[in-house]
Amino acid sequence: MNLPFDCLEVREERRAPSPSPSPTHSSLNAPQGRSSNNGGGDKKASALHGSSIDQPAQALKSAGVRPSKSRGQNFLVQRGVATRIVSAAEIEAGDSVVEIGPGLGILSERIIDAGPRRLTLVELDERLAAMLAARFGDDARVTLLNRDFLTITRPEFDGERFKVIGNLPFGIAAAILRHLSDYRESIVRMVLMFQREVGERIRALPGARNYGSLSVFSSLYWQIIGHFRVAAGSFYPRPKVDAEVLIMEPRREYDFNTSEEPDVRATIRAAFSASRKTIRNSLAGGLGVDTNMIEAALELANIDPSLRPAMLDRSQLIALARILRPATSPACRA
Image (cartoon, rainbow, N blue to C red; front, side):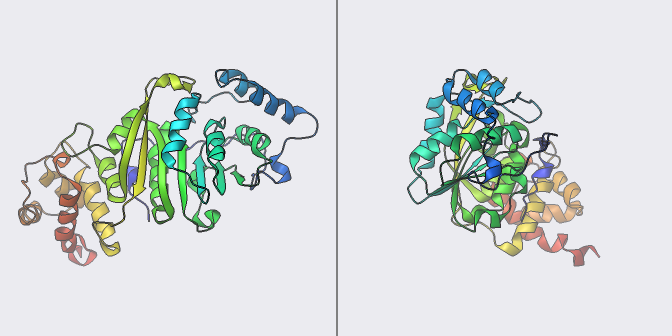
């Protein structure tokens, strides 16, 4: 089931694969994932291993990579930050870990050092994938998927429970969170880095300036158990804004059942479709329901119809969805 994040202000911009041909790496131990014998691949790997993380430009140049703004390629270069992120995941010996967008491998190194049973790296950029294959190809625990994470399906994770770590591209962070929510029953914990503004919106509370549909949808499925800020200077190229790391776990219990979920999603989407209007007018316009019926539902839910949508919490919106369910059903509209 997909969350309706397509209605959010966060722009979901897919990253296009490089036009140069390259096979998909199903495993770092597969022949296509290793560097060639002509010395070119070894040279790139050597340049990365030999360069300090304080020399990311040289490491990227050696790998043939020029950072792309459209792909949101801002690489983490501060080892201390990487250590803190991986520590927050609390990786144990039997864990399976998925890393989204490993880039230069600074987080990958720390994850491997933590000793998981399995690490799956998902990297879209073919040149970075080749570099990662050269670096980590001798470790049987590591698998590389040279893919867009948004195309990964449950069977590719073997149906096992796993932890997720990632420095998410700023432009598609909401889309990735939506995709991860589809697999929440299999996820133990996530430690994800977002653009600071997006991170603050995800964890915003009712009444806050940045509280909106992203905040509500995230809270439906996830608990935020910690967060910390990462300065813009921790990345190369340096972005214009800071980042924020969120430590998230799936909720053990949900406030709605499976049959109610479509109505809950529709109500939240409608409520924030015109967030500057009153909740009465937003719901009437968003759901296409008569204003009198909306007012009656608000009265039953003990909600002031003149409130702005941003003043309502998750439980109030779920209550409204239950009350309005008969009015929004196909039979009622017929």
